[in-house]
Length: 275
Picture 1 (spheres, rainbow, N blue to C red):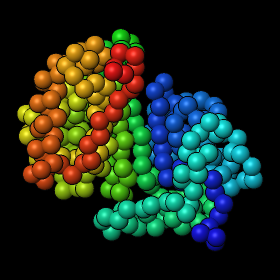
Picture 2: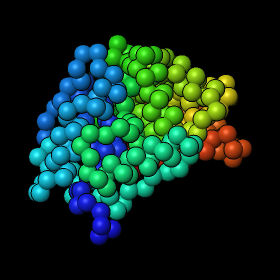
Picture 3: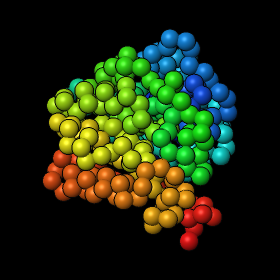
């Protein structure tokens, strides 16, 4: 570790994140000091090669606090993603070769890179089929902003290079275009790459059974309740019994080996569900 460059965060070399509202960067918009909007017609590869990411790499190599990062960033303050903490997964020969280029670029402190990102974060759509107590997606979201088929197809070379895809929303599975792309992905002989944040209402047993393979490496379900009454009060979506049927189908898929994803239940603590 003593021979590694003193980079406080490796994300400008490893991650591209798109944000609600049409901005982008190497991490969460809440921890960036400025808003940087995606240029019209820009593809993900254009953003990964943009001057913004290069500037973030330069800042990580300079002395002092990176100007583009807020002091509230927990990743930076906790030194969670310094070079000595970087973990790179194996996989296909193509993925391993990309990972080697990632490591070489970080060790050399390269500003101009030729590797694919290790992970990509994408909000699929602002629309949600729920109207949760703590959210505005159900009230204000729209499918008009769902990503296009060309956008998802444009990620295929990165996925072949071993990149992980993290998707959220709104409700990602409410986007027909995204679901069609997932179904295409499920037909390939490819390791599961999708990390899904969902309310779980559309993970029906029938849809899961229709997929040749389940392309999820992780599934986080926003549960926010432990009883039917609290669920109805907070999530304001499908009935608790129907959701439980979906969760049971996921667990069956885990037991029979069709699903390799870790399953996480998340909960936003509110006065309405604290009990």
